[in-house]
Amino acid sequence: MRELDRLDRKILRALQKEGRLSNIELAERVNLSPTATAERVKRLTRDGYITGYMAVLSPEKLGRSLLVFIQVKLDRTTPDIFDSFADAVRRSDDVIECHMVAGGFDYLVKARLAGMDDYRHFLTDVILSLPGVRETHTYAVMEEVKSTSLLPV
Image (cartoon, rainbow, N blue to C red; front, side):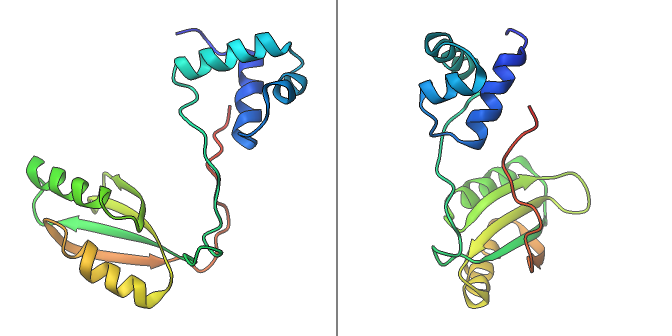
């Protein structure tokens, strides 16, 4: 793979902030011809730097204002338990992120819910019913200080 140059980085920064830019608008922002810009975007996509585009939605407007992080400790750390847990988490629409982590617990789950009643049901019906769950610790977010998906480019 080629090394990213200054123009590639400008394109990635611009698209990361505003994924709906037209090719002409993007070309103007990076001071490049539309044809050259389109070719670079195609290459950046083909090479896996750009993996997709999406709209950022308002959790509050969609009735999902409660954000929780849940530490999950499994009773056994065997491949079959890891696979079963991961498969079950992938099926839950409430879970927006789940990461296997190193340290004092096994998974960190990030979920968006309507409120505490929904969280209580989610914890009982989804998290605690997952294969191998031994212990959980939940942290309800009181204020989102910073939330971004922008990567330094």
